[in-house]
Image (cartoon, rainbow, N blue to C red; front, side, top):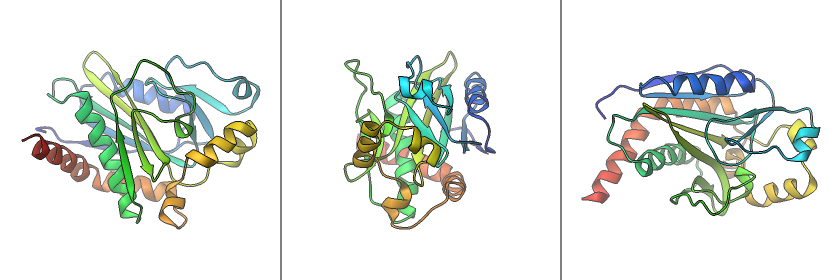
Length: 229
């Protein structure tokens, strides 16, 4: 790609601080990936997404993401923010395919058999819950979602954000969920631990993703270039 990756393994922070960092980085035209966890169980809303009544009534830490997509649950996941200078000649489809590809490669290292979803986004309907609904860019284990991703254009940078569920959702979130939402998540979402068949820690997945980031991302770009010939 002609640029060196800045790989940031960040510390757990409060939700508002995490999103503020991503917004600040999005204004720096430097090739960067930031992998992080959350200091406490939290919920992030997509850009300009209204909070459902149950969330407003709860005591869960809540924050709005700079990117779109549906409501995401944090505290047992690994979150990722990718910053790509727009001066690089990479279309959105390639950026998102590379990000999904790196997440799928991570899942494979734990023995999972992931499936990538790469569908141009539609303006027809906005999703409410990321893990419980189909979305344009995702990684699946069978027909259940492990991870979802979204993108936003800034003046000089593309910001890609996403979350990979590593272990079961934190108890405070599970207790706050309406019964119907919890049932939908049980049917349509799956953690990396469940997909791999053994208990995994988000910190381990975060370190492994960071250690292999450059090779996995570049491998995805190379594969797409070969198929384009």
